[in-house]
Length: 130
Image (cartoon, rainbow, N blue to C red):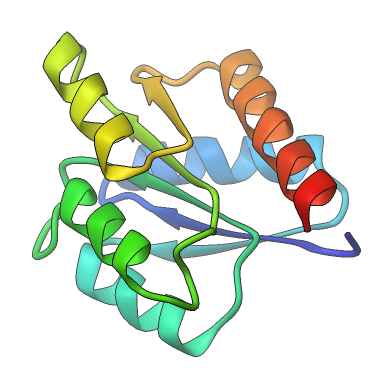
């Protein structure tokens, strides 16, 4: 994989900045595109190709769970790794994300170690199956 293309769907500018900085520091060959809501994310996925999606659950216009559902129902996107990043900690929320097809789930506040581990696991799976 030459350049890792990541779509980060997050409406909090501070969280966007933190995650983007962590990704750029830990991966030399990364491109991080930002979307501040679900509608922008959907458009970005229609116009570009990504290796992985990192999405908050509580985003404007189209929520993260609805975005995940749309990804899984879209033939060209349905196999794309999707990691939910959220402050939702209830077991029911984690189960819902898994039922909708989330590859992984990160609870906020995000730490660099957890982010890098989850991302590496999912990118390794992508490389092995791609």
